[in-house]
Length: 166
Image 1: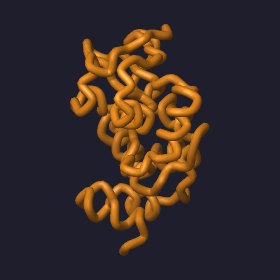
Image 2: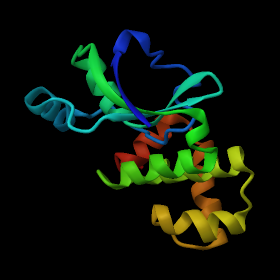
Image 3: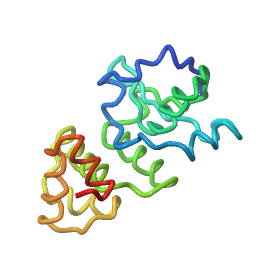
């Protein structure tokens, strides 16, 4: 892993490749984070992985969004070379980094389960045994299936669910 200074204009912030491994959802209200960045600067670098020739964000989606909104052009990030991680460890690193700052919401927990299922072909048993305890959901087939079903909702419904409007 290396530390690197990036210019935000060099990052394709809405590209599918950039967002392939991150799990953040509903990043609209970043006022506390933006205020912290204004006052103290970026305290914790974003984490990227150079994967298959593209830059993928493992952790720091809210920080990246806040930097864009604050029009801060240059920022520090940690960058892992492709050979330093595999897909499983890249996903786990992103989860652990996020959990060190905050609690994952149910939609993010659902996204994580889906990423392990889709990218690593995890079985329901593997999701229950390995991932459920990490992301703090009940270790049962029923719970995993319910969380996975959240991925089928529209973003509008997911947001309403998180805002407790439904």
